[in-house]
Image (cartoon, rainbow, N blue to C red; front, top):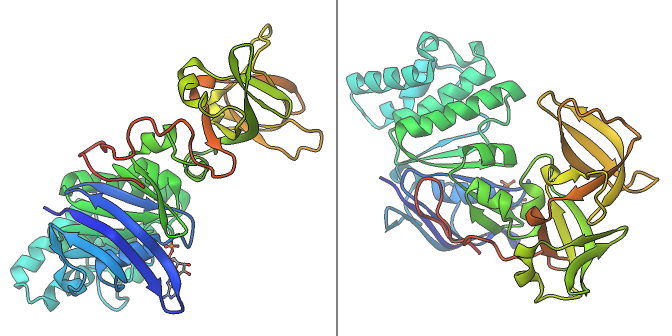
Length: 386
Ligand code: ADP
């Protein structure tokens, strides 16, 4: 059982570099939590503070209720899997996995049992006598995970463990780690810059930027109700489309008007947005919510031409421009066998109920985050937001 709590955690490196500011997260027992954000946002620093590899400047770190700020890494009952595997090249796979246990003076019979069990879970039994150099990247990564499993830790920490693998292996290891989580029933904290990894693996995602938490929530909460423009643009692939406009009341209707478009705000958003008349906004439209308009439709239309079509088989992505110079790019997800072609002028209409509104200046979501930011994850009630 292991609950990890970060309260007002801050990290200031020498030279006054504030890498992490006021991080508050509760990671419930057996939860899989992913910290995600662009390079330099402070996610590795946060993980290393949990591991005890980096001193905490201020704040409280608790594991199962106990404050562990000053506990040595080896006493935290945590195992970390690194991006570069960090295997000992001169040792066999077996010895790499056994090494940490030998240092802890665990009896040989117990070590053997744990190594064999972990090897079985990871399907690496046949490589136990090999040295790391005789393994593929994916196999080495499994050994690195195996070394963590044999420790039987309360908490697993992963620092970008899949970055060195090719795209196909990454997808495979992603599902393997997710399965491992179900099988071991352990608390896992995972750091990545890859939002797809975050979305596919996390019960709960913590989005960071510039050392600050932007939002905490389940993958779909972040996708459907991003708390600000940064989260909206970071989560989702292809990314959300953004258009600048102004909220205007006309003939008893609320419109969002911008360069070459005038969209009628959906009824479900009226209540929230009427409080902000004449406000400069940025609207966010997911590619799947930008539809080809019916021929007779006249309201809420966006005219564009297709600059590129990416055929993905099951669907296609149409890259669109509203300007002759192709500067502005929008992306629409269209059905396979769509029959459209490059250079075609098309009329689009956003699914207005799905459109998100952000304050143009601050980037904060205007609809409020529907469903609390303090939210339930798929697995357990947990976490708290900004
Ligand atoms: P991420 O893992 O999100 O890429 P890091 O946690 O590694 O980000 O780094 C966060 C910030 O702290 C960055 O600006 C980085 O340059 C800075 N930083 C990281 N390690 C050190 C260090 N040892 N000394 C000074 N600054 C550091």
